[in-house]
Image 1 (tube, rainbow, N blue to C red):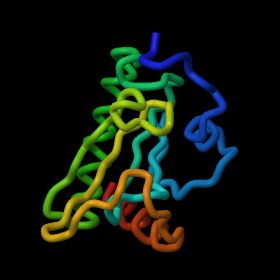
Image 2: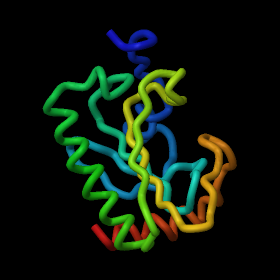
Image 3: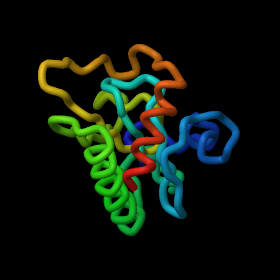
Image 4: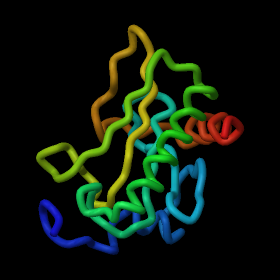
Length: 142
């Protein structure tokens, strides 16, 4: 059982995966759906969302987690190639007290640049056109 309840199939990430909500898509395959974070902490902040319907990584199947983390690495390397950050944060939250705000398992890939502080988690909404440009660069690096 999850840290804070059962999985809600109506969560926003489930709706994005189902094509019921818009996003700026970076990549999709049988295991994950990747898109730009609409409230990025840094330019290029990308989400890798496993298609397995679970609240967090602690609830994932072993195979699902293995498939997801391989894709996290692949997308993070594309972000590195495309955007040339000074570093990359890979993070994943499990439960509200840990910082999780959408209760469908997901991984954050956050480019870091020397001298630039991170924005607040789920803070300011980005310009969609700028997200499309960044997504195009990341897709080209895949």
